[in-house]
Image (cartoon, rainbow, N blue to C red; front, side):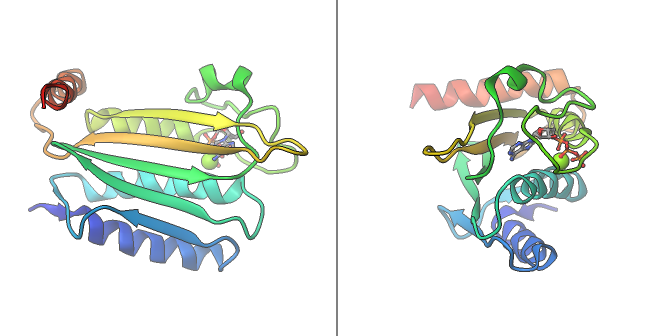
Length: 177
Ligand code: ATP
Ligand code: MG
């Protein structure tokens, strides 16, 4: 049975706000009132809670973060956006490898496994993850956006690589219109 991604995100944001104890504030940006998808709810929760936890962990207190959900044809697009410490460009190429921690983490603790596992979960869904980031320095505020694109109706009997091709086909459709 399909999942309503809008409802799912609303509940998730509420749960994460509670866990964060009101330190940051999480804005949910939606472009519609419902969006159905056939996805593994636990896997999706794992993906988004990890990205939101990172956004909270690597942002100063009081700096709100955002979760944006949009619909592109048969794809669900999630953006997790923060205005935190940012990721140095030299660390970007290996960001999704196990045990990688960036040079600017300072005293913020972690194992460096979160994103490696998230990437696997996204791939199991036949989706893609990408990152865009700017390091903050004295005068210039930085921030990070993680983008996850998942087919809303993946064919579960297909291998991840075939689902990847489904993703390409959905993209092609989008290019046509
Ligand atoms: P954990 O396994 O507990 O999640 P972690 O947060 O260190 O530990 P990852 O989630 O895999 O590990 O992230 C890898 C590294 O990427 C982090 O150590 C941090 O340097 C950097 N990073 C991830 N997300 C962000 C973010 N939103 N802003 C800045 N740096 C980030
Ligand atoms: Mg993490």
